[in-house]
Image (cartoon, rainbow, N blue to C red):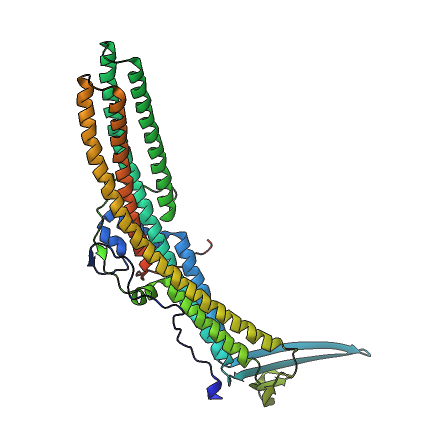
Length: 450
């Protein structure tokens, strides 16, 4: 009988993981930390992340789902203990027969106890599966926290970049208006044509359009950050920041076999396999006999003071064995085996996707570094071109179209560099998110109706 119990089995990886990742970040000098946002060393970002973890409603929903799983685990474990029921009652009878009147009272009390001997481990397996579900819910809490911290950090970087774009665009508009005044003056002197004035006017309006788009983006990101932190846009306020933080040194990466198990989705997939396997054990045990014990004691009397003078007690053992169920229990066990197989396959897919997430994040960060370096070099070159063409234009050696082309390139590259810097920070956030980890989370009190 002891050999029929169903232990929790270890789960081996269905995927042969590589020894190392294909790429690595350039400077791996900071130990891996679950509180990765602190590596940016920005108080505003850290405050937003902490507020999101504490106030976000999706985060609170994840905690509520955990509480539900905990309650279900208690219910599943209750069958391991005896079930005792206390009963009591009182009644009074009035009867009139042939003009004779009778009154009588009756009081009763009893206790009933039932207990199933878990010989085959069915109840224990069910309870273990429920406890594993609780652990899965814990991992889902950490997964929700990981997604939210990544989302709020990326949104904040985009918010800062959008404000920086506004600052750059306002400066570019001022520059473009000064150029327009210069060309208008030259047109009045007969040194240039009206087409040059119109082209510069159109360029000024195009820059103004870009400013409007950037202002809209700031407002939308303000709304998004408000919702992430559990507030309305009217309640939410954030001091303006127009400078992106520098990219922190990259984290020291573990091997895939050491890093991937830190991800909550991978841990959840392992637990899901074990929970499915425990439910398979319960389904197998369902085909075996059940032995239960029951004890009853009851008493009754016409008066309360005589209630315990007369009593009756019984003790019984019961054995039940399914003889014919048209293959119902066997089909359930077969279904549970397929669920275990499905969970194992899902675990393998989760591992592959986790590996892909890290590899993608490493590749994207490296390529983004190279892209930003290329944009910076282009900006330096086109700035020199602009200086030369402006000088030649003033001397009358070039037409204004050459100057305008260089000016458009300089201002466009300046804005593109800002966007590339923000995207590089976002790629680092993707990497932190892909590596997983567990934050220290405070469990909130459940919401209640007033």
